[in-house]
Amino acid sequence: MHFYDILDEMFKDFEEYKDIHKGKGVRGTLITTISPKSNKLAAVVEAVHLASLLHDDVIDEATLRRGAPSINAKYGDFTAVMLGDIIYSRAFFELTSFNEKVAKTISNAVYLLSQGELDDVKLSCEMNLDKEKYMQMIYKKTASLIEASCKAAALEEGFDENDFGLYGKNIGIAFQIIDDLLDITQDEKTLGKPSMLDFKEGKMTLPYIYLYEELDELEREKLKSLYKKDLNETEKEWIKNKMNELGIVEKCYNEAKELVKNAKKAIQKYNIPKLEIIADKVVDRKF
Ligand code: FPP
Ligand code: MG
Image 1 (cartoon, rainbow, N blue to C red):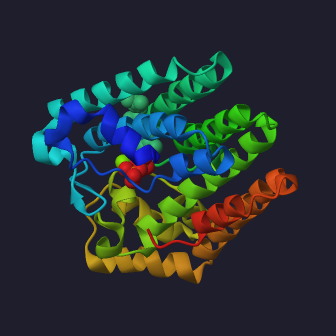
Image 2 (cartoon, rainbow, N blue to C red):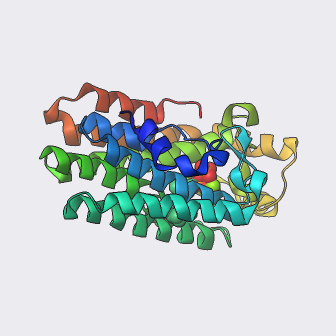
């Protein structure tokens, strides 16, 4: 049974909310690519991810998720938080049927991703210019669950979990860097949510950290004056033009490409072409 069908089965008591978007399924696909028998594990991880997005949309006050109204926008914050708790609890119930090392790998990642979300909120209070803090935060928030998914699938197959963990960590960090870049380079229609929302929410993502480093004094003051503001089209264009002019977009892409290269290197000897294709898709995508 495909992991999406197992997910449906897990939540059949909550049919009225079946419009919850199931997402791209990156984590589940990684798991079943590494370990074809692990559809249930894939469903568990996708459920954890789904729960975290329900909570994240409440925290970010997001009204759209993949072009459709978010659950908090449609049913309110209380429902979104509790549905997140239900999905998360059910996922953990299912996780207890796996061996201890697999269960610990996934549950530790949830501990990390929750810390990452808190760090994201804390870092959004003021203009963070520290790249290391940003990298640590995206590792925890996004890469930790992708890393754990790959490790757990490797454990199920008897592969070296460190090789697959390294693959997952690298594509996970690259994935978030690209996400943060697309927030700037893509339009609302492609993104399925308003563009350049991160800066308005106070999120100093990698492109903004690099941009600040390259701007002159006067321009830095201008960027500071736009921070957390509802930007008009002219202001958005100014930021985008500066990012292109100063090679920031290219610099971020290259950094993500380098991570993908390292990811592929980590699992090269296993010769699983689909994992290389997934790694390339992390960087080569529009949304
Ligand atoms: C999306 O980030 C958010 C995450 C990847 C993690 C969110 C984690 C929690 C809310 C902790 C609670 C966890 C559980 C399991 C209940 P983003 O806002 O940068 O991405 P987006 O643009 O897709 O919203
Ligand atoms: Mg969010």
